[in-house]
Each structure stands twice: as C-alpha cells, then as structure tokens.
Length: 171
Image (cartoon, rainbow, N blue to C red; front, side):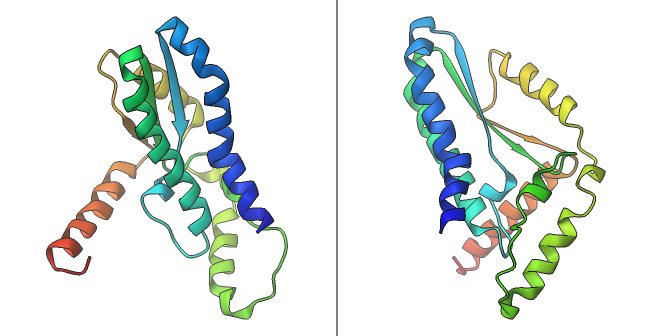
C-alpha cells in the first residue's frame, strides 16, 4: 500500500497542495494559469496500471471542478493528456521489487518490455512544452489537450468503443 500512497501523493495530492498554496495569489492577480499533466491512463488502463490511472483520473476530475470554480476569476485551468514521449516515465513506474506472484508474470513481462528504450519514443517533450504554452496563451483555450502522435486517434477509438458498448447495452 505504501507504493499506492506514494503514487497518489505524487500524481494527485502534490498538485492539489501546490494549487492550494498559490491560489490566493492567483485570485489577487486575476490572471493566471494552472496546467495539470494527466495521462491517457485517466481514460483507459491496462493490467498493472489501475492505481496510476485512478490517480490521473482524480487529477482530471479535480481540474474540471477547479476550472468551474475559478473561471470567473480569470484563472485558466487546462488538462494535458500526453501520449508517449522521450522521458524516463516508463522506467520510473516499473516496480523494482519482485513480488514473486506467478499469476501476474505476463503483466510484469509486458511492463518490463515497455521500460526498454524509454527514450526511443517519438514524442519530443520540448515541442510538447511549446504546444502547451502556446495553447494556454490563447483567449479561447481548450479544457484539455491531447499530445503525441496517434493520441487523438486512440482517444476517439476508446470513446467510440465505449459509446458502442452503451448502445449495445453492455454498459
């Protein structure tokens, strides 16, 4: 459970505490921006990533609520959902300890494959930063931006599949 608490402290409570620290100054300025980095994991997840996805979902829901609360104060709130980028994310999120539960061997192998060559991803984090800044500076900025090659198509597919399940009575 310690790892789950750490994950929520980093991905959800950390941003919440930071926002609480700066929000009163932002209200005084009446001109600020809060950009929360989420993940496609907030929308979907695979075996072994449930807690991560839950932490990013919590961040997104808090961000949506916060935007409604501070929009009239001219404080912008935007969510960024990045796809794969050249970072050490995949390596840093692979547990170092082996719990030795054979039932989860396939999930462990899949996660270890993802950790191989993390900097071989196509997404350029510097270009992503430029897109984030230029987007939040727009007067009519979006509530959320999707970043990375294929990310929009993947989100459309996930949501289309969910809509089809609803229409077919599976949800």
